[in-house]
Length: 380
Image 1: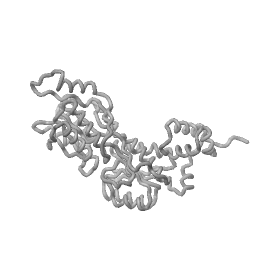
Image 2: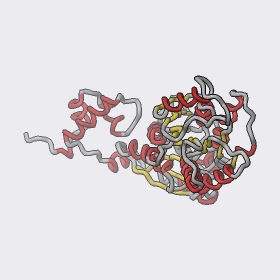
Image 3: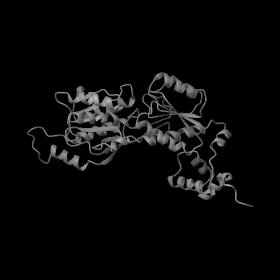
Image 4: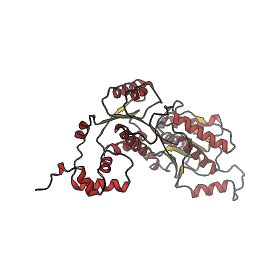
């Protein structure tokens, strides 16, 4: 007999070539987590070498599925959302499902309409990056047994709603503590929208770090923001107009930090010699600006990958080991922070300002992990 045509090769042949079980091959094909990286690579190599064709449509029809996963996002105009989407696509790209993206433009009506379409049963499940927290529509999806996972949620969710997020409180605490270690005491914070959970978590972490250092929080140093560059610019201008401006600014996200850079540049001020700046998210632009931005890294793509894997597990009718996954943030130390300038007449001995300057120089580049904190989050 002749060789079996490539498009008729079976999972059994792939399993034999990769020296794994058919169950492992199935998990790799469907993008499930729980397969060791080297095992997954071996199976993928066997699939490629054997010419096995992943007939996604046929498998979906056989199981009575649409073969579609909905991804609902508030917008498509930030690297924050694009990084989450990249992670989702990486997982779904090796599964039997296509991704259908809907944007709500941060409007309540559009969000309700998107969730209503999902409730009509046009897809097998949904990944939701919601502008707010729990909603009656989300409850409706669950009552109709439509698998849902919320990514980087922004408000309160029921305990049994599957969700993936990051440690926002811890990240903000660590960022503020780092500035304190450089000798800064006049540390300002540009907040995100007060209605969004991550904004509240980051503000709380900022305040907690100042409190732990025995410093009172100056209300003038806390400015409203909107997670956009223009909002960061306007808030920074207001801070720089104060009679005694801050020596460091912790922006609620990296886009606001870009606005801070613009305001400082416009006034002829230097980052970090005149004002130190820290952001939050570690979107790609953070490492491209000059000086490179010190920021708190959220593992955005990993959030997307894990959330998609959780959803595939639910679609298969299996239970999740945990309804909530909280990923650690990490402080990415780059070039936008320096020691606070000493007060006039202050001695520059081996303690105080000089010690802070030494810490600044030694730590201009590096990574510090953070693991405490609460999860609510938005574009940040």
